[in-house]
Length: 406
Image 1 (tube, helix red, strand yellow):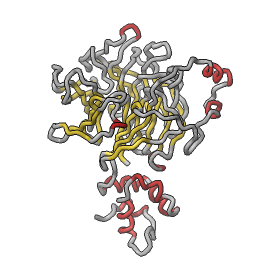
Image 2 (cartoon, rainbow, N blue to C red):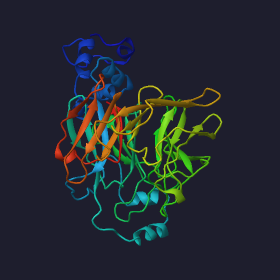
Image 3 (tube, rainbow, N blue to C red):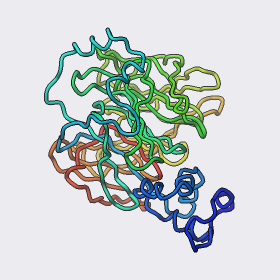
Image 4 (spheres, rainbow, N blue to C red):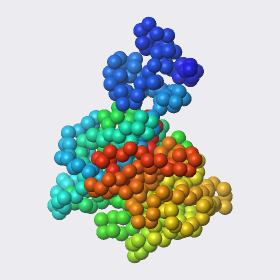
């Protein structure tokens, strides 16, 4: 298989001594991703080539890219947090760089500490190689942080959640750059304008490096209306108009160039999930209400909805629940359409589950939690579910996830 013309124009001579350029390039695109960090140190020529965006596209064209499922989940064997920084300072002086005054830091230090809270970590399932591993993180990540990936820049963001010691919502942003090597590119991003948890979060826009967040709750468990957008390249947050309603435990998706916030509940109606959604249109800088899109007032959309291929959303329901196989809602101007397709889980209503998508396939983590044994299942093209070998250290139910090609 020959390399594409686009990649060939940007490739370099003498990649491997004694081999033609085309053959040398074909060898390099077949190197598994876990070794990319190491082979970058071979030469500046190899580093520049592997860091080039065309190299990633060529791996995908050749069918040698790898599909990763990144899971934020409780660690079943807690260990002491790592305090040293990796690829950037993540120690206490960051608080000053993020604009926090000494008085604000003192207030944080005076927050009551909660002992015995679980440690959360980032687990990665490589679906291509059928392997699992934990990503080394330079400090304790927040509990219940949201996980979102940016495919074009090969970055993974962990946003918001709870401080693991005070259990207070945080503004934190952690960024993992997969292009710098698996687990070797951690840094802190600029914090959000508002501390929040259990909020909607998604990358939105065509070819964009922007992440939208909206809703969630504050430190008093009040549902939040506010929303903001993060420009990853500029490392800055910009507030956008608030939603019409405060939405706690909502979930976010990209719809076209817009951002959809699905369901959630208000401060005075906790646990009663709304049937509507709101869609933000960046062209008009406004929100539109979408009626009758979530028909389950007793069911959280978190862990039960996922973006599928195209503009379709999957709705994961228990095998015994009655509902339509498909429903859709669209605006009058034809800018967007919310299409929900039912995916039946191979479990009863009493089983814990967290479902999503991986490389265009439905995936579900069934059971698990704490030290209990759980398992991952993937739905094949024929609609049948098959088990994925899940080591005990990775069996707890995740809180959030993102998938990415590398």
